[in-house]
Amino acid sequence: MKRILSVVILLLIAVAAVGFFQGWFRFSRENTSDETNFTITVDEEKIRADKQKVQDLGRDPADSAVPSPE
Image (tube, rainbow, N blue to C red; front, side, top):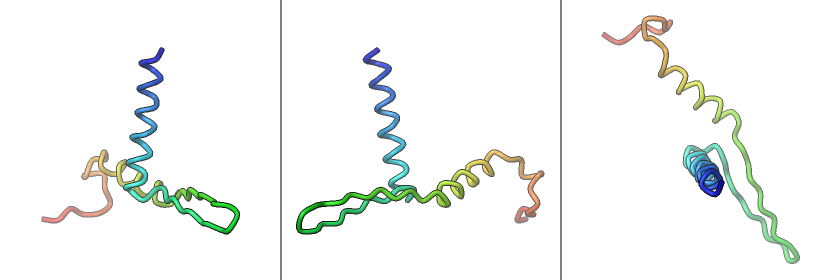
């Protein structure tokens, strides 16, 4: 059970790291005199665009509407 939990935590950390470096997530901090606020912003449009790029990699170039360079 510990091994499965370790793998799940490792996968979550990996997804968070890739997402941060791909620009899917942004972290910010705001300080006031009495409190500190942390904000996580998720760029859903960037995630969709990157997902579409990955899906396009798996398509057959002959099926594409864009002509290939000669």
